[in-house]
Every structure is written in structure tokens, then in C-alpha cells.
Image (cartoon, rainbow, N blue to C red; front, top):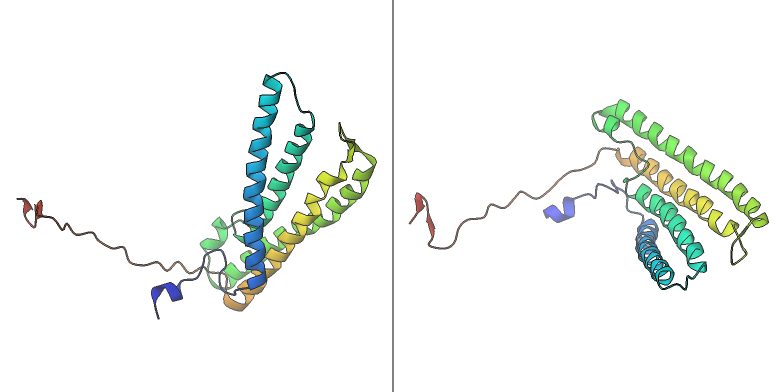
Length: 194
């Protein structure tokens, strides 16, 4: 078996869930687009203000892009164990204590996700009574990102708990042995310079 086949990704410890891999890839692509669009709208806002003809609607677009990038980024980072994950305590433990800490940590994250879903949905519903200026778009369009993020974070956290219970939470850190470069030219010999 080749070393490449034995490697296990540190962000997905064991079990491959193809649908969630595709979802993670889509979220990462969406985050990249949102970041690019956010930076572009900020530049356009600065330019239009500098030339004396500001586009006021750009501030609405910029804030929307920023908020969606934050929440979708948090969801993608949860899948990758880059965010909302407290690993310093658990990495020093093994066996039952490691499993207990890992599950407890993920249950806390799951509680946060459920709060995002519940309270985010309540804010979303209340957001239809307030409007953004100058477009008069309901502010609920911003609040929608919160429960969506909560659903993704909950889904990814449940996946991590299932993977951990089936296969353990310890990450495989297998890597290829480093290759040592040998001088090939005539400049170097075993005893030093020629």
C-alpha cells in the first residue's frame, strides 16, 4: 500500500462522506467569491465617493457580502476543524478521557449551532419589520445567514461526532519521509569544495 493511500486527512479523520465533501467545497468556493466581491465593492465605494458620485447602495451590498462571508466561512471552517474547535486540551489526552473531551467540545459547538438556528430564525422573522436604506430591503435578508450557518455547523458537528465514535478522534499525522537532496554537480565532493 502506498504512503499516499495510508494518509488520512487531519480535517476528516476517517469516514468519507461524499455529499459533505462536495458541500464543503461549495462553501469554500462561495467564501472565496464573497471575499472577492466584498473587496470589489469596497473599492468601488471608495472610487465613487472620491469622484464625487457615491453609489449609496454599495454599502448595503458590502455589508451583506461581509455578513454572509463570515457565517459561511465559520461553517466551512467547522468542517475543517479550523474554527469553533478547542483542540489544545484534547490533543494531550488518549483513550476514554480523549473521547470524553472531544465529545464534550463538539456538544458545545452543537449547542452553539442550535442557538444559531433557533435565535437566528427568530431574528430573521423579526427582520421583516425593519428595512435597509436606501433600497428598503427587509433586514431579514442579512439575518438569514445566521440560521443557515447554524444548520451547516450542526451537520458538520454531527458528522465529526459519528466519525469520532466509530473510528476514534486521534488524527493520523503520517507523512512521507523527507527527501535529502544530494549535490549532483562537481562543485561539491565528500570532503568539501574541490
